[in-house]
Each structure stands twice: as C-alpha cells, then as structure tokens.
Length: 351
Ligand code: CP
Image: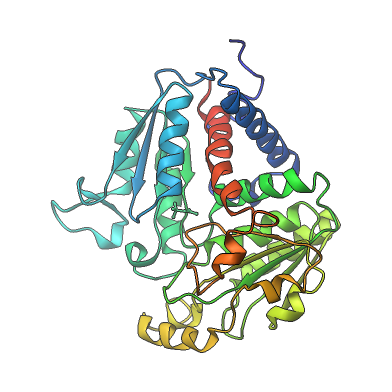
C-alpha cells in the first residue's frame, strides 16, 4: 500500500476555519477527499494513520460529525476516543472555573497532547452560553495550548468540515464552480441554530469564485467579519457576493440553493446585553414562509438542493424537495463528511 503524497502534507496544523487556508490548499484537500472516496468505494486499504489517536470532545450532540470522524479515523488505521465534557472535569475558559468540576483548557490541551495525535471539538449554543464567538474562543484556547492539531467540528462561528463536504458535492456536479450562482438562504426552523454553517458556506463559495447570494429576513445578518471576508474573497477570486432580504429574488436562476435556519444574533451577546432565547424564538416564528418548496425550486436554473443536516422537514424544506433524487444532494453532502475529514486527518496527523 504506497502512501499518497498528501499524507502528512499539512503535518501538525490546526483546522479551525476554511478561510485560514489558500484556495490551492483547499483544492488539495478536496482532491485527496475524492481519492479517499474512490478508495473507500473500491475497498482499498488506507491505513495511513496506524496507531494514531483522535480525541473527540463533543459539548453538543451529533449524528454526522461524530460518526464520520469515528469511522474515518478507524478506516485510516487509527483510533477515536470519545470525550463527553460531563464525564471529564469540564474543559473550561479561565473565567468560568469551578473547583473540582472544571479543568483549564490550557491543562486539558497539554495533557491530551501527551496521549494522542489530534483533538477535535464541537461547541456552540448552550455549551458556549449563547455568547457568539465564545465557542470559537474555546477551540482557539485548545489550539493555543495543544501541541497536536486541533480540529473544529463546529463552533458558534465556523463549521469548516461541513463547508469542505459541501464544496466537494458542488465540484462533483460543477467541476468549474466559478461564476455559478450559489444561494445561501435562511429557512425557518422552530429550533435555535448557530451561524456556523451559513458563515462557512459564504466563505468557501466566494473562495471558489462563485456568485454567492446570501438571503435572509431583516435581523438575521451574519457577523461583520464574515461579510468582510466574503467580500474580500469575491474580489480576490473573481466571484461576487450580495446580500438580499427576499428568498424568491435570491432563488431566481440559482445553480445551487442552500436554505437552512440560523438564529437572529441580535438576541444574544455580544449583540444583546443578555441571552434572550424566547425573544429569538418569537422573532424567528414570524418567518415560517421562508421554506424551500418545489415552487421555490422551480424559480431556479435546475438548481441542486443542499442542506448540512439535520434538516427540519416541513419547516426548512418539504419532503419532496429533500428526497428529490433529480436535484437533492443532501445525502451526498453527508457522505462527503467522511471523506473530507479523512483527507484532513491524513494531512495533519500523518507523519
Ligand atoms: N451537519 C452536521 O454537522 O451534522 P451533525 O450535527 O449530525 O453532526
């Protein structure tokens, strides 16, 4: 089994945000993911990380992320070690320490670095006290103190592995995505969801020169630093970036649509004095008509339907859209999580 050149090509690096990497580096990851996907389908052995351990720390629940990382490291010959924050002394930022219940992230990161080869973390929402940016700061704190790579399995600002899986799905149907219209739209859900997916989507879409349209009702703006970075990407890579407040206008002639929920950030810190989850829920309940239906898909240019999962069926999108084999790539996106994560793990954890 010859070892491919991508193994170890990013040895020791953290993966917190796709926009920390150049377009060329993201292309290399997606190529490796394509190769690993073929290997998986052809039952080719890919045990490039034999004997390596990935620690997975989940402050939030998960289907896709947990199982694709765990299966992925096993298929690479390594071992996944699941850590629930309530089963260890909860890894915590300095200002929130409670004696014998929490442990400083600075210490947890340094201890785990002596046992294994990478630490992957998911933290947002309640686990980050709904202070937007706090989840990302927790992951940055791990990255600061750990001497092994830290992987962001979704925080309250970015979901980089989802964005990689999404771009892999886009490349599969549009190998040259530059100039394709990619609509990232708010869609209603009764739950409160983080900003991470739309933020990472607009960044990776603009990084590939797509014409990215962000659609949302008033009050659902993404963070300013993300809007700024998306505009810079559009200038740098020759695409465009536009924000509109009308879902139908956005869908017109789209090549890819990604309608999903996120929460109105002005109800939580640092955009509000206190966390007001009831206010956020009540506000988003006025936008139940932001739903992806067949009628909405008919406005597009034979667009592919995308969603990171879990999709709230009947709220964000109707069943006939999600399950439409002609244009839905919902399960392809989920499938690609396995392969993009294996690619990054092989690149950063490989010798
Ligand atoms: N898309 C995604 O991250 O799914 P899970 O919440 O199931 O991990």
